[in-house]
Image (cartoon, rainbow, N blue to C red; front, side, top):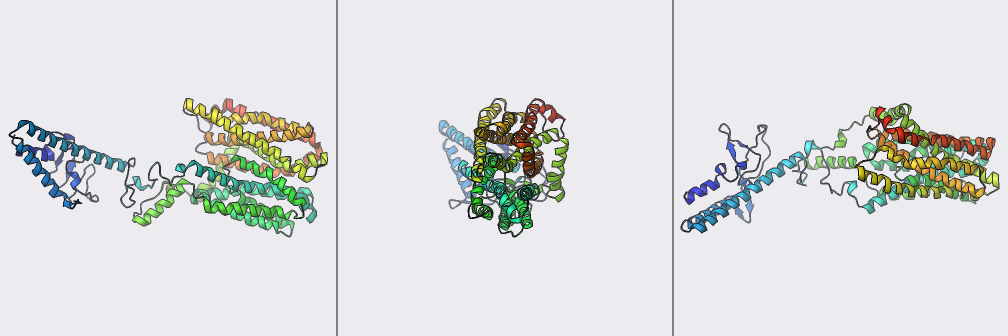
Length: 585
């Protein structure tokens, strides 16, 4: 074979004997080219791909028109001809020297293989982009989105909240925990002002206690309003509720009659319920600290109104920082905003987020936040039992705000400030429970997942079983032990509260994956009812039965409900298999 024929053989993509996978066949009837393997053929880098023609047939790839591109001041067509001339001279010079000629031929073949391999890589990259699983151009005007659904730019995209640094996430969780603590702080601080409010407006203490109960009733209505808003418009909508909570708390502080106090307390509770329950400790830290501060303020020259002014000042400070510092943390809404921005920047109106495909109708949210939670509460044994146990535990915390003054002030002659200090024992108990929850999660639950790859929902019930044992013991000590034993009993109640409450929420989420939001909504609904009702029965209960028997009754109820986690640990998988909502094994 002459050097010229060898050159032609190498330069012709249709007769390339080295890389047959990149060969193509010309269709006689049309100027199109069908690729047999989908790979990019030799010299394809001399073309700039244009948009697909509307007549482009499925299953075919059209070879675009060559468009000269400039590299280093030279046309690539001219560069190609220069390379061919150099290759011809190399082959010609090797005709008289067999070794040198073959070396030149081998070098040419290697260069062609390299170009073929590079072309194949380009084709594979293009198909990967079309599938949406490969590295894509970050230019929004040219990037290909699978089904026009906008996603994060990469797995490490800093816009994704999951990729934020641990320090940043910890700071945001702590800040949102303070927001929650302000809400729960306000829920119980009014209990210390109840006697003063009753005396000023000439009503009984039981009537004045409605200020606490109505605030907690607002927690029933709040999630129905702010839950859908946060799903459609993002998590920062909670600050709308925080603003309303601050305004109505100021209304309580300046109220001139009892009716205004009751109305503003209710609507303040509605706004306060928007704060996320992201930190379980914040749910109990606020109510246990506020009686200590509230008692000191109420008995001072400031008076009971300053308990509400204090709520306004504290919540305004934390809320202002949160509004400025906390970004949007709900990934679907972040992508929705990104898609909206790209639509206007690129004029590609089909771009959208997956979140925009969801059903945001009033019927959908009514089913999710009202209908389905009630149905699950009535028809799902696990939801009914867990929510009842959680709600009783949560309600007893607010019952203590009315009963502790009876136990220590009336029973032992303590001052209001002295009796309020006993709530710190409950706080200490919750801190111990938080540490126990961490140990269980780190060394029991996580290790079970490491060994088996997953963990059944029943593995979440360990702390609840421990809490079920400690809870009645705390009430028995509170009712019959001496003063020191009563304080220990309050600490036991604090330990049991957080162990039961946190484990119950975790179990509902794991057992009802798809419907976990409805299960948690059912829990919120029922626990708010218990929390608003039990403070009203505290005074009649303890005054009529006495401290000992009243605490015994509460301890017996706690003991009966304490069997719930043990039953579900044994029969939970079977019950989940029979459920139409729960996740079966």
